[in-house]
Image (cartoon, rainbow, N blue to C red; front, side, top):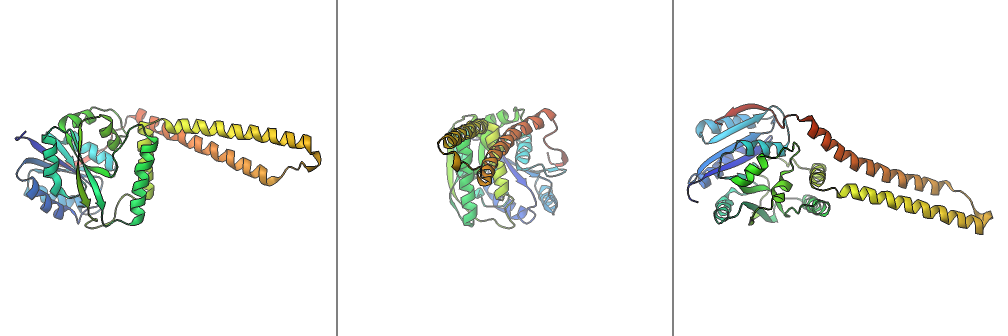
Length: 309
């Protein structure tokens, strides 16, 4: 396929200093294609929108969607997918950690038949040891508990064929875990490898706890294994409790004078059982919360402003 429209979706949140450098690197790469660049502002509080507008006035192929407030990175991507008109759609963050220079390689893989082309990190430069460890923990946790295998060392820098984008847009889920949904379809997949650079400016918006919540979102969206684990915990605590009763009855029968009820053992038992109960209730609560959000059927996001769309 030689004549095609390329859509590039860029979700942004407080990235005012990265807009112009990103556009300067991106335009020379895509100028030989028919293209559209869609910035989706996720409720930025700085001058991100102002700087994007400057680019939209210079180039009508650059578009802007602006939310009223922060709806989250996944919702920004979802909005971009629903607006994009391209035959292939690439999503990339604005921090320039993911090099736009590999976009032609991704397009080449797509032209050869791949429906999904992931940009996979071969190295992670400019990131702390803690960040690398938590990223590894994220992929291990989600692949351990989820029924869908998500490729490791990939993020949201990927190319999707229009067929895959249409599939995503037709889903009715409000809480869309896109990394899992993209893999769930089972479309032909290829990889392009790259060395990840450090952020151009600013700090990452994904800390440890946000990554942990992101992992929980993915796990509960694609698996009921946590519910089964809660059931196993219940059986285990019940078995331990029953064995403890048998042990104490035998000890009392064999040596009545040594039978003393100690507060330490009682405290430990209560803490153990209480902990299991809280974990179980928390797991069930996660699933109930997702059901609650789905049945509300509120809009996924609210658009404040659109330019060149």
